[in-house]
Image (cartoon, rainbow, N blue to C red; front, side):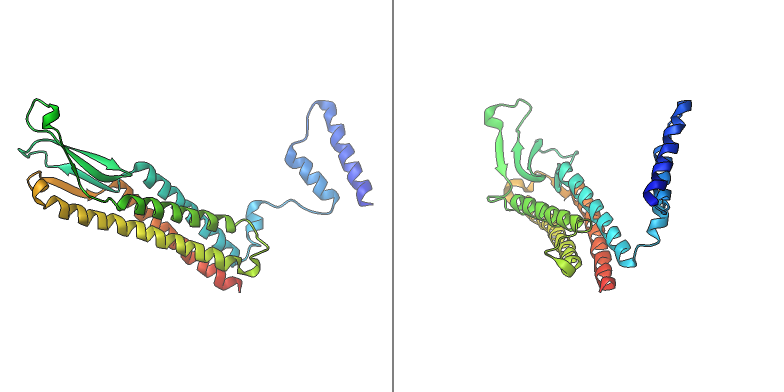
Length: 239
């Protein structure tokens, strides 16, 4: 009976073509669902049937997505620590070269007429360990965050009932590496200030400060803290 009724409804849809008026996709869907004794529901109507644990899980994924986007912006800016020279100084002009957003070398030019003999290149650090630390913390945090985001929408049978716990662990791990990234930036700033107090750069009147990437990374850290908290609540409610 149901198939016969469905066939009649479909024939009615075909008869509507006589006036060159085609049925809308929503109307066709309603006709097919009505033939099965079902009714189409809007997204808002379906949201009321979601459990609180599922809602928290979706919100955690949203916060994780915002955290990843903020971290990508911070990496694209590439300005973790910046250096500038006092504009009113009487000292020769300094040009700063950067490596992955961290000051690496200072080029000093003596006098107005620049020649090869006037150029002095000073390395700020004999072994710049900050660059590999920043690169590793950035991409490990992004990797953990991306996997945690996917676990909110992809069900993995191998994880079973522990999937939410694994997602929470990944959120927290991503936040730990992001906090390590912020700590490395602060450590680099302290070392930079100590370097500028040494004899070869003491009179250069160079000033160091935290760059735009650092503050965007702080925003990313705030989002990941929210994601971890929401994921933890979702895990507690799903038990």
